[in-house]
Length: 274
Ligand SMILES: CC(C)(COP(=O)(O)OP(=O)(O)OC[C@H]1O[C@@H](n2cnc3c(N)ncnc32)[C@H](O)[C@@H]1OP(=O)(O)O)[C@@H](O)C(=O)NCCC(=O)NCCS
Image 1 (cartoon, protein in one colour):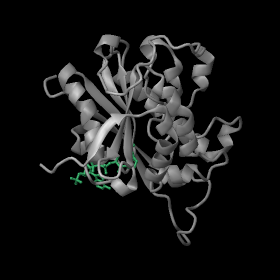
Image 2: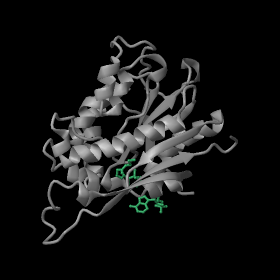
Image 3: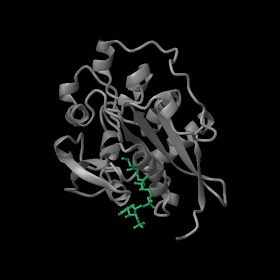
Image 4: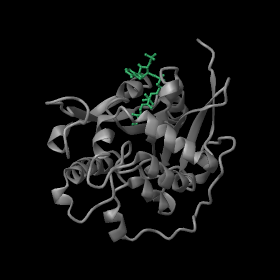
């Protein structure tokens, strides 16, 4: 086996701007993210991470890993793992991870606020057992809700994918479930295909094997092969014809260009001795 050329560490607060840029670069080729950036309320993945990552670092049930290139020290990738239903003593050790308090100072969101919450990483503000709940849009969250959502095709897409993800979460994680969830995974384009994504996933799947619990992910179209290689299986798909929700045709791609179909895959990792 080839020697690992990178090291996995705990993401720190000061890494957030670089992480946000890295993820934005990693998703440049993602059709859904490209299209959402052209909506009436343009989605900006970098800004999304700038807001959500500091919150996630405060969550006692989130572990954010970063991969650093051994030779250059460059930030090569990161992965947010949510650990659902784990007690404080069961949380894995990761050197350098700031252990957030079990009861963060932030007040719990009210039910009505929760209903409006379109970007599930915000759910991590809630205390105790619901912390580290996965996002409603785990991989490519959408724009903020706008009042005239029905007129905005991107908002309609967001409503469709959000409802589908909600239904999946209810099914896969009934109350009392203990599992892991990949909340986000990005590897810098410069460092892709060197096994970094696999190593960031292995960290969590090893915990699954040890604890006898499953993991799941709402995979982006470009990433599902990487999850498959890491041992995840496709359980359910949502195939979206992006052109039905497009605010405009893809720019700079010539006449008649299409956005095409985008398949979200709900994937599960089953523990080795589960
Ligand atoms: C998905 C992603 C994290 C994979 O990271 P990575 O470090 O390149 O992954 P690895 O090098 O560990 O690749 C593992 C396996 O995944 C598969 N894979 C990865 N990228 C692939 C691609 N572009 N096409 C086909 N298979 C691919 C291969 O089987 C690969 O194994 P191999 O290189 O031995 O053939 C990275 O491509 C990425 O950041 N993509 C954009 C962001 C994204 O979609 N994130 C996922 C959100 S759910």
